[in-house]
Length: 129
Image 1 (cartoon, helix red, strand yellow):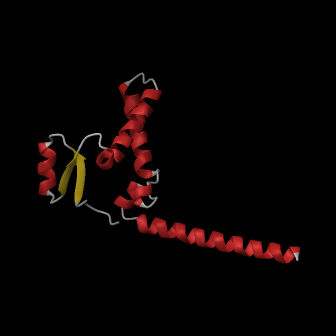
Image 2 (image 1 turned 180 degrees about the vertical axis):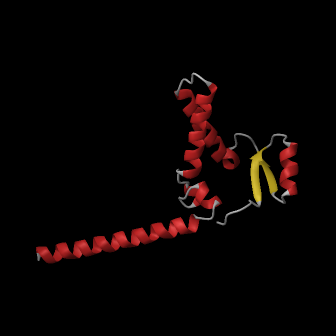
Image 3 (image 1 turned 90 degrees about the vertical axis):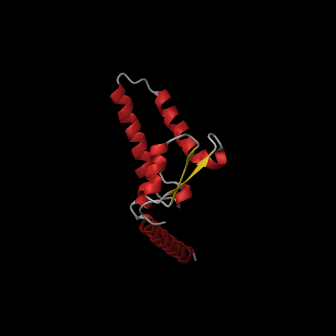
């Protein structure tokens, strides 16, 4: 996974001529999928359902309260929530080119943890013998 401009976007079948022209000017291929079709639109539909559930759980006195809560949700999804389809890193990690660094750091922590557990287990076996 490399950072930078995507080579392909997938969107619903709506008519968005400005978006299409922009994508073409950026040499980004765009493909359309059927709305509400889980095989093509599943992730974004799930994201929208999660956002809708969040909105429906609260009563917002002012529009800016809703906007603030929505911004927090978007920030959480993009910067804190790990996405299995991205190799358990955040979209921000992928976008900014940190995915490999994050994954290698995790592997190093895992390696050290397992080594420490092996040493503890060996010491327990020696002490009980």
